[in-house]
Length: 116
Image (cartoon, rainbow, N blue to C red; front, side, top):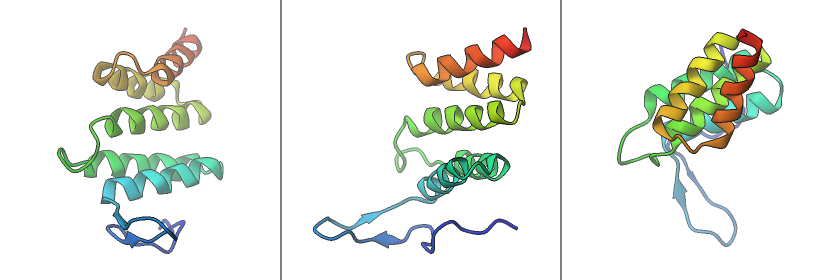
């Protein structure tokens, strides 16, 4: 069972001194949690969070580029685990959504190199 990296629940309002209140979507919470796991070198947990994020992205609520960024992040996690085919597939899907996303292009190239 995964543990949350922060005490915040999805759709929680966060207040920062001097800032406006901002409500985060469930997808954004999973993305943040995945990023925390990635930084902590817990790549399988990061992949799980990114997958949950992709499944919970809602059109009109979440930014349209979120899917591209999360696919690219998951591709990088797969590269760290040497799952090159999955990394290639995720980076390729991200590039289908946004052909100018440079990180995805680099990650697809790295995966291609190792796949020969």
